[in-house]
Length: 277
Image 1: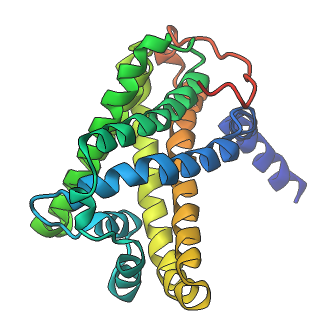
Image 2: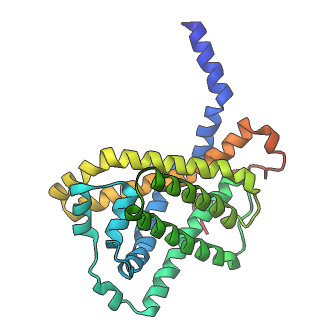
């Protein structure tokens, strides 16, 4: 028994799992995930609602985008559509200035992701005038979500899985490099992109088995509030995976990629939680 415990202890130290847990605590991973979910619901969702309502191909609106991301189907997807879908008149009642205001409010969402990546990689924050990077990243995020919805009906089975995997890894790979201002090499960012996409696949499976029945139950018990709580919980999971995936990629290089980490930026100490530009 003691021999097995020693083996497990050596394996635990070799993996560096304790270091990974410590990094998650230093990064305040759950705190950041909850902030991500709040910003996504308050600043990003209104912009996506307008864009989805203006979709000339009519792919079901924002609720369809959300149901596809969460892996919902059947009755749970219909319940989500009944509660969250806005009327198509939302486009006619939204002025150009309104769209620009929604886009401006969405920029802090990109800023929170950028700040999380900067802390993960220990690089200095970019100057304020690099806000254009956050706006550009937000545009590419919208395009990425839109193509995911387009492929839902156009492709099936292995074909769609392959396209989703490739585009997802490319987006999160490029997104880290772009938001970090090119301060970290492409090769160093690839493990984090793969880990992020792997986590999102796992979250989708969890959502399918757990959130699918909860959507219907909460709609019956609590109405709109219950459905919004499920969506917010899912967004917390998305934030956890996005920040955690980048953190895992950095940890993997530090502990098991010594041949490729000679020029990695040094890890910096944790900054205060309120230091989110």
